[in-house]
Image (tube, rainbow, N blue to C red):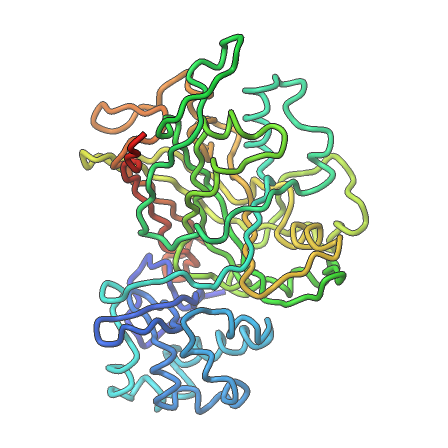
Length: 434
């Protein structure tokens, strides 16, 4: 199918083509209050201003709900449900079409263009949702196997439950931050000598600070306690997807994780991209994930095999000297479980969900060295170094290092569906008096 053509100038190769229309929260110097917008090319369409100037006059279904675009988060809009998300996205696409059926609304309306279209370089983006709960899963089979081999050997790399259910743990919603937010190096208890007979920790800034290349999905449905979400309803309960970097303190994690799993090693920062790509925009890129040679129980069985997204993912590391190196390229198809399966499993006990709850995919890695989504895998738990541009090397992240994750679907540069960037820079640890 040929790409949609627009009267508006959308740069070739933009992640935010007319095929996308991702939603986010912006503020500007002219108006400091955060509000809802969509990204289109190298501009944002301020939906608060668009609605205030009768931009939705040809879409009667949204008119009783236009106040959602004045909200400082996407929660209220997301709560309207997937059918409404689809209608609004399609309407915005129609408004920007070369042969738009509504030219008077924006195409020939210079005053509304001036009021509602803002260059992306002039906006500040904010956390798109008010996140009540955040759960991180472990659905990247290659990552799970690679890490398992490092600590338990190939024969016992995967735990017996791994292929039966999407393993997860409860993360910390309060430290989920939008792209561009600096990440302070955490401090905590670490074992300076893990081989010592008597295990005694020291207090130290993290020495093994790592990344995890992930995707995140936002829930758009409230459920009651005791009300599971069936697998056939799970997909319609998800609003859209973001890029995610689940920063990890490997040395703190190694000491604390037995017996209850990660805690302080994961609670200091999780970065997500600013623009949420709707499930509708991603639907053409549904694909088969990794084959599961274990039959899952009925409550996890989906009707179609194409249940993950064919997203090309890349991780770049820029050092404080300014040198940038691509350290990983992989595909989001490297997942064993889908977001609908994660949601169905999470809720099977009757765990209640709220609009804005966030699900993390787990680290996405391919099988090759340059496809691995964490430094831990790439350096084999510190045994090797990663070669960077300019002759620099890394095992783990140093202060001043900046990580940029990008993701994009499709190959037609006039019809890309992308996420923009997920960026975080490491700041020095807090200095303690003791």
